[in-house]
Length: 346
Image 1 (cartoon, helix red, strand yellow):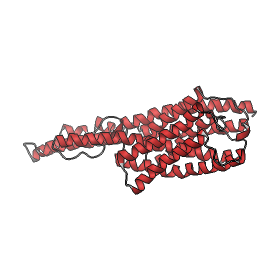
Image 2 (cartoon, one colour):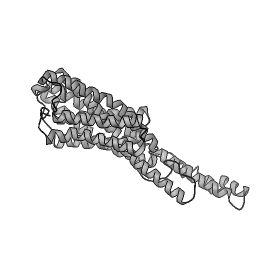
Image 3 (cartoon, one colour):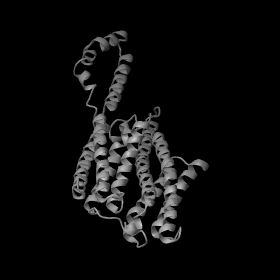
Image 4 (cartoon, helix red, strand yellow):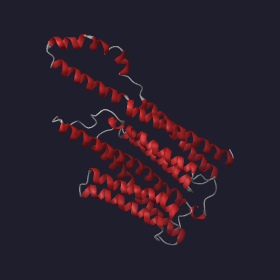
């Protein structure tokens, strides 16, 4: 195939990727709202209420027999049995996600083949690769830690990123600028892409943690006001957070992903300094991109240090993590468009 054909194929695969990610996002949201786990929980709660009514009923054992053999018991084998096995939106979402991931990979590969170079030489290609890294990190977390609940949120971020890349940042395939024409682009930029994708997943988990922690706090307040026992995490039905794990689990998940991404970001900064020495004759020149990369590193280092030494947990740690993510986003968007420097070619 010619370069023009490969570039056209890359654009078509990008369209397929966006469509598959959008449908997967909807399926993930449906899984959160109507998945089998929620139905099983609601059924268990209904059975618990029914059992309590039987135990306190005036007829004692007779009431229990009626519950087991009467209309309520019969209905459990009728229409309710069919409702006990709802459509598994989660499996459909994962399949669509994997298909989108394959199309996304094809988009990047065909664009690189069309330009006969590494396919992250401009903002369009870099943002496309970051979205791919975020989806890849999510799929690993989903299978490794059973964190499928993050799918709707990561897919939303990926769709927004790809939308921005295609609407405002799109560039035709072309050669690299001289400053990027080096083997270091495969090392330094790849590390930055992987770290940014992982930080994005950690950011999604952290934002979800804040909402979940607020919900759990409200549940505890209502339980205390009713003079009842504290509600278990996630006991309140309703909303997309009903099937999300506890805030503590989300907090630990965000920490694990950040601990994976931080050393890679550190390596990206070090390798960028080595590349800068080869390209510009100095390791560090306080270029805006270098400054904000370092500020991002400091923010995430402070987050990990506070957790390891000061024992920070919960909201304080989450806010510090989001400060780091905000610095990361500004480093990518703000620095490239608000400041001029040696990295302005992006």
